[in-house]
Image 1 (cartoon, rainbow, N blue to C red):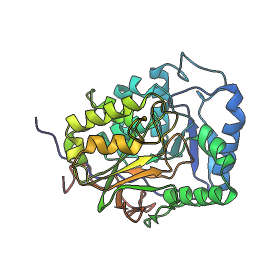
Image 2 (image 1 turned 135 degrees about the vertical axis):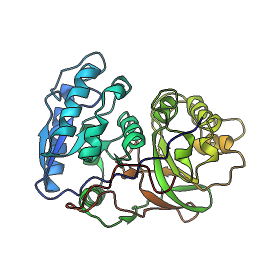
Image 3 (image 1 turned 120 degrees about the vertical axis):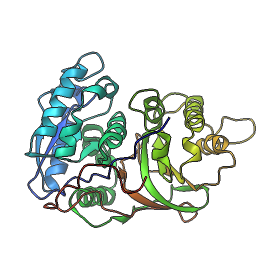
Image 4 (image 1 turned 90 degrees about the vertical axis):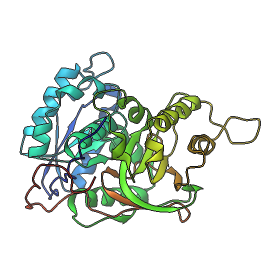
Length: 348
């Protein structure tokens, strides 16, 4: 089967002070106990210089089963935000289990006409992957509002909070490349090497599951990519199985490097040793086999930690031996720059 060339990379316009960011319920509901965390997220964004509004479906206690609303209702509100010229960015309040229910209802043409940052991770990483494949839009794999900016950021050291605020603000407003992301001693070299390539990734179960839908990313989209992923919950054996899906689909033969986030609440992960459960490193290297690509592990993105931004589609430099990860391109374009003509990329 042949696939069309990927769309051109579509960067949204850079945000300016006073621009409107809307926090929306793109998946899970807002439980009343976390309303104060949502309020704190608003404070953080306002401190960055933005105006903030809450979307109507983001109402404490409102839910439909495990979702904030029915998928069609979420899609209707999401599309309205995409079409509203006053809205310059959309931040997901939380993740959840709903994005698969409205992939077929997204207004991709509105995204092409007025690209804007869509921020979040977890279930939102599915939106990033599908929207990036269909439109070329840079996906802003960042912390969520309620559990992230208003939750885990509060427990982080003050210096780390300030570092993250500056990083997120720069990501959204600057047309200069960020360069090296702030590393910590927790980062681990699981397989040495250096490479450069576009970032592609998210929650590993979403990366694997979307391949079973009409919204699958063709394997060619992973050519030369730096694959980043993380996981929360489930079993270590599930992670091994998801990686096997990526192996069978040919993705692991196409990527140039891998970055693995901090695992969260995964049963069956051990400390290593011949008689114990495997470590995440052992699982990864077992599935990779003799594929000689750099692998950097335990990087601070995902459910376990305040998230470093991982913009999908942006070229990154990875040096696993030196334990560095750098964003080599800006995620946004100059405010008044014209949109590129819609069409295939110049290079596949």
